[in-house]
Amino acid sequence: MKQHELTVLLCLIWALTLLYGEMFAFWVPSFFTCSWPHLTHSSSSSSKAENGSYQADYVKVAVIADPQLMDRTSLRLPAKSLALEIAEFYTDLNMRRSFFASVLPFKPDVVLFLGDYFDGGPYLSDEEWQESFSRFKHIFGLNAKGKYTDIQVYYIPGNHDIGYGSLHSLKPEVIQRYEETFGIRNYNFSVGKVNFITVDAQTIDGPPQKHLTSQTWEFVKNISVDGVVHPRVLLTHIPLYRPDDTYCGPDRGSPVINQRISRTVNGNTNDIAYQNYVFEDSSKNLLDTIKPKLILSGHDHDQCTVTHESKFGPVNESVQQTLGTISWQQGNLYPSFMLLSVSNSAVPNASIPEEALLTQLCYLPMQTHIYIWYIVLYILSLLALLLWPTSGTSLWNKCLGLLGYCKQGIASILSRSETKEKDEDANYEYEMMWDAEGSMHLVKKPLKASIVNSNEGSLGERGNAVIRPSARKNTAQEADLSVKVDMADPLGRVPPKTGKSKTKFIVQRLLRTIRAVVIIAAVNVPLYMMLLFKDWVDK
Image (tube, rainbow, N blue to C red; front, side):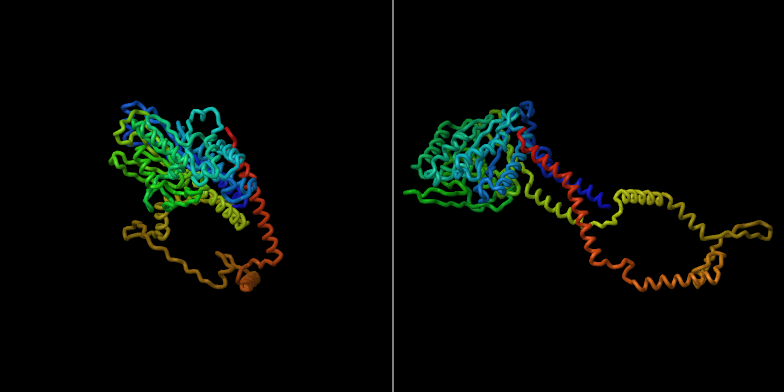
């Protein structure tokens, strides 16, 4: 392969790599690896026969957890610094691609966000909060008009949005700021024939005399008075209690995180500064009061599926599914989202909820692995350009030669039998013989191999021609001369390079490599920029 052919090949490899890493990889969930669970559920055939179509029976809900937009509190970088701006851009771009290219192609009717929208929410100034919220709306298309405006969106608060109880007494304005932006913290709504109960988990375990804690439990009490008519889903950012080292199922990629609680002293109370799970007593109280069939939570940044037993019997058991983060920068190499099919038909309360609530976990591209492949390909490209031999043969000629060899091989196989017969006849001769009666017969006899004497005359004689003595003498001198040259240079016929020629060779290699890199960049950098801004600009 010659140098220009190698450059063209690398241009093509880089173009395909960029197209996959920046675009095609985000199409994989909607085309190959994920689908609405009610379309693949084993009993869907009966639902279709009774009701006519799948889409009319279920409302499609997409669930997203922990986007946690990066800000000055994330990497301890100065605000407005170039490094922080670059980190924010690529993190925001990845989540925007995930939402528009992986989530929206499923055409959800409802989108649920499970909290932690900003990384340092409680510690941001009002200006920084509004700037982060503008980024949030841009990433998830909340500014878009037209075909996305009919999607209903619901939010629940996370600890990175409003903090824990220890912060609420010091900065009560964070609660007001959140509610002005995302709405109230405790509320319920209906999707299809299923009731969704949203609870502010950051205030559940506070002291009962605290206003925010009592407000949350008053809401839970009012929900229980209404009675259970349809299946319920409990939405809480912090997962409900589970024992330490509980198995989280095969979808979890990181070690299980156990309960961790830290407190701060505020006056006469010890307020919570951090917790991994809701306390055990509070969790049981929520389960017994709300009686949910399904619990959706975030906070853990990785998948975890557990079953909570109920004092009312196995029929009232609750399945808790903790959803991993959608961001590739939050400690999970495998970001994800969930597809939730919610029944739009009346389901008796005592029935098994498998027909009312169906879930499907969907994984997003592993952005870290994509960037690692970019680095590896860059190194391999440089090595190929630097070390490729200058006297390489043409790739096109090699392909033609390979085709020629294949053609000769096929022809030799087809004519092998004919060649074998001819070779056998060539080793014999036929002699005419007459018998006593005068009849002629052909007798097959093997040929006698001629013996060639290897002497001095063999160098200069061929057939019947004879070389004159003077010519033979000149030929012998030339042969002796060639032998002397070969013996004088037993290591090779190429003279060693001097220091000056080596320097020239290295400089030529570097210039050739730089020229090839410039050509590859001239083709692929515009393609990369086009792919970036195609997904970044509002449509």
